[in-house]
Amino acid sequence: MPKIYLRHFLYISAMKKKIIGLTGGIGSGKTTVARYFEKMGIPVYNSDTRAKELTNTSIDIRTKICALLGEQSYVNNQMNRSYIASQTFSNPTKLAALNAIIHPAVYADFEQWKNEQATDLVLKEAAILIETGGHLLCDIVVVVLVDQEIRVQRTIERDQLTRRQILERMNNQTTDDKRKEVANYIIDNNHDLNYLEQQVIKVIDEIKKLT
Image (cartoon, rainbow, N blue to C red):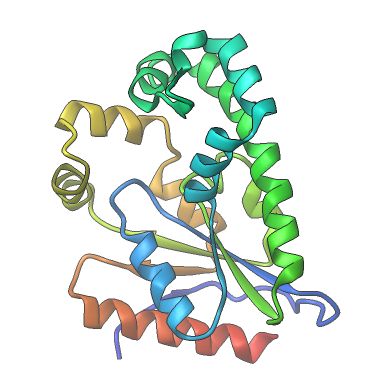
């Protein structure tokens, strides 16, 4: 059985639905990990996917983003992501303002989704769970860690971004040391998929024992 790093936590009240927060840096493979949780019967809310959907469908969000970054923020009623990235990833002030528009809407959407689930456990996948303070609203935090060079190469292959673009995005996320500080469970994704799945199964078993 693969080694899993655990930090046990205080007893969680059995009176409410438990939220598992899943996070990791760009290219860490957290979406793959989320699929294994879903395979094991735990509903998954992908914050990044829903954020993209909400930014394209919410008139309120669109109005606020255009006021912040200009009308070029949308093309053919779709968010102009390359333009948004060029305006925010090297500008922490604008990035924070953009997040302040999007994240409350995603939080409200998640709460509605969570209440619709019939299970005792739900999983919230978010790339910047810690940066937004979202981990404080989770009962359990699971962090996926991968060596930086592996993350860079995976993201180059997946997103066709340059190394510089990827490192820029990494610099706008928290560090792995900070992720470790708040993690209840740490999953190592430096190896093959079988190794990864066995870790997820072990984590789920541990969580279920505590709920």
